[in-house]
Image 1: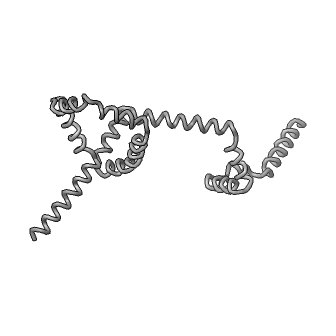
Image 2: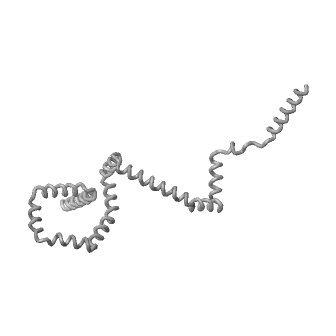
Image 3: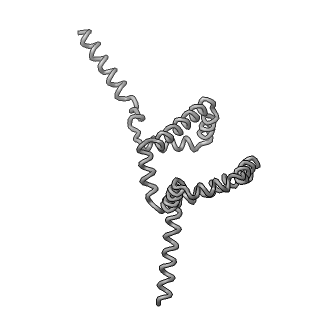
Amino acid sequence: MSKAKTLLISCFVVLSVTACAPKDQAADMDYDQTKKMVVDILKTDDGKKAIKEILNDDAMNEALVIDQNAIKGTIEKTLTSKKGAEFWKTIFEDSKFAESFAKTLQPEHEKIIKKLMKDPDYQKSFMQILQDPGMDKKYYELVKSQKFRSYLEDVITETLSSPLFKKQFEDELKKAASSSEKESQ
């Protein structure tokens, strides 16, 4: 009987202790409450200070640099892959996108060309080529050659297919059509 009493008293003590213990509140906290608590913590001065310390940590900066290199590598792989080439080919068929892209790059291209034209070494090399006495004869032979004519045809075709040129040409055609309509009325 003493074993039965001991077992009964032990069960009563265990039930009393567990019944009176507070509930585990962390388990009952839902996502929104947790999110709000974390945001509130981050908005405090201590939270801001902790974030600054993390960002100033050398190990963290190294990890960010590594991540930036990984991002750069991923972008390069994506842009130079077959799928990337197909994507760019498709997207440049849209004349509005191609025009805005060309306009965005145009100032940089102009800067590079102007910089080259101001470079004394570049100017010297260019002038040497143009002032060569045999160049007149070579220019004339070149212009008359079938190879040059084929090249010129390719350049003209490329120019005509340029998105910026297409847009300018479309605008000029629209202006001409509207002015001819006004004249005929």
